[in-house]
Amino acid sequence: MITIKEVLTKADRKKFVKFPYKLYKGNEFYVPVLRIDEYAMFSEKNPSYEDCTAKFFLAYKDSEIVGRIGAIIQNLHNKKIGENRVRFTRFDSINDQNVANALFKAVEEWGAMQGAEICHGPLGFNDLEREGLLIEGFDQLGTYEEQYNYDYYPKLIENAGYEKEVDYIEYKVYPPKEKNERFARIAREVLRRYELKVAPIIPKKQYLEKYKDGVFDLLDKAYGPLYGVVPYTDKVRKAIIDAFKITIDMRFIMTILDKNDKVVAFGLAFPSMSKSVQKSKGKLFPFGLFRIMRELKNVKHIDFELIAVDPEYQGKGVNAIILNELVNKMIENNIEYGDTNLMLEYNTKIHKQWESFNFVQNKRRRCYKKVLKVQ
Image (tube, rainbow, N blue to C red; front, side, top):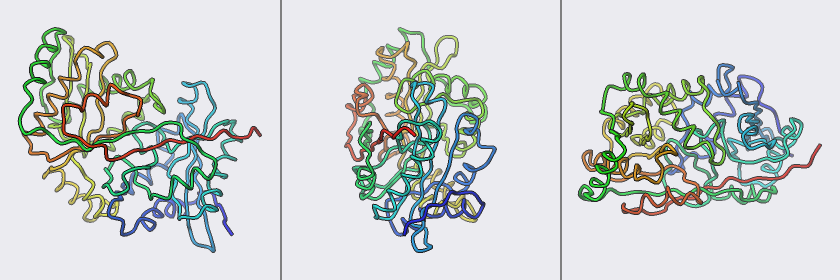
């Protein structure tokens, strides 16, 4: 018999966070979330709760935890698209359809009670959380920013009544052996024509103080129309910076400014932390932080987090400036390859920009949806 229990106590929260570590024990491709970040998700200080309501559930079978799931009402997103939706998040389960059905039923019933007419996901509180279910690339090492799941997950979700809403594509990208003179020439011309400049490398603290608001404003503007994206409130912006501050490497930040020092384009890559977080099983202490810092110092692989261009400058070659900077930085720092983040399958412009690289598509992710019965 399957029993669903809402996560209410500190002990429940601990079980919710720890379950994936048991489920994926020994899996060479799974990269966990830092446990400290997951525990912070339950805190009343989590700024996402200003605009969201959430519930979390555990599934038990014969007194043993066999699955988990979260439900989020993202009010900013619902307002943006004019629909009442509930998101499912952090779905993990043994390969048992009854367990999956019970977990999704809990999300759907709670969502319907909040007025939701559609359930979709997997999605987090915002676009910088892990999202999309892996449906291709189960033999690829995950990145720190994305979720890995077993190959039986798609079947569990589809058999629970869900269908594809959108897919994301990911690539493994290798730098050219030499700097690309064509990129360099186009970059110089675009910089000259539109009176733009590349922001110099400055200390991290100084950079964040000077450009963080401009970067987030740009992300809201450039990514706002895309699937699942919500604006970043001031408190969420601060929380994101605090969460990623340790992983920011100024060598892999590309910031393009106009003549008034306004951020008009931005590229960000993180040194890969996959191996160190994997070895530490998501724990920072006592040795996790040391492993992470060591991996960040000896960078061989990078994770491309995002590239954003102000809509006013899209289609004008500004991407070539960022790609020229990216190529140069990969070559100068002896980077072997980079893993891209999620790119919507229909976003042809973003896919086309990688054509000058040696790349392979190595992963595909999917967000699902299901129309709920009106209560």
